[in-house]
Amino acid sequence: MTLSVNQQKVLKIFHLLFASLWFASVVTMTSLTALVNGLDNGDQFYMLTRIYHFIDFKILTPAAIGTLLTGLTYSLLTKWGFFKHGWLVYKWILTVALILIGTFYLGPMTDKIVGLSSELRLVALSNELFLSKWNIALWAGWINGLLLLIAFVVSTLKPWKNIRK
Image (cartoon, rainbow, N blue to C red; front, side):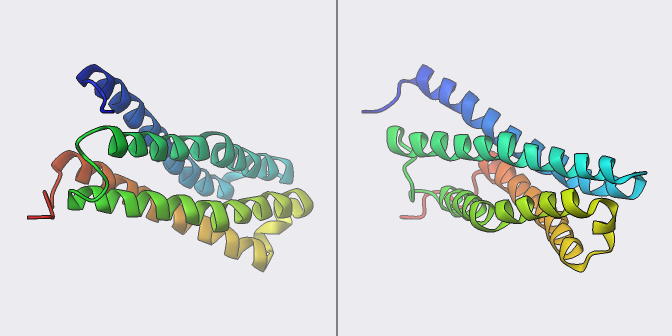
């Protein structure tokens, strides 16, 4: 079974929406880390980490999964396939790697960040464990954002055309 042209267009719309939402979530979460310096009290700090957690689990995660599933549908039901083009291989490796790292490392770390901010409030900003996790979250945001931006460029320019030739 292959998708018709109109079905492919609808799939592309959803794929782009999911990928854009994923990227916007990463940018927003990374931006939130910069707001820590202007907070006046522990309740504000805790709420900031709760918002960070909410975006991660309620917006970013479903968007990443939606991107993966629409990409999977593209590969299975169109001429693109999985390994026909180098740019597709790059996108598959990137998507799966980011989702696995997010699921098994960054997600649990975000839970720990919220737990520490709930328990310690502003004192968390002088806690070594919290600061190490917060700094990892900041760097992960920058790296994820850059990799997703590269994926957008690769999707548009489609370098490394047919790798079987």
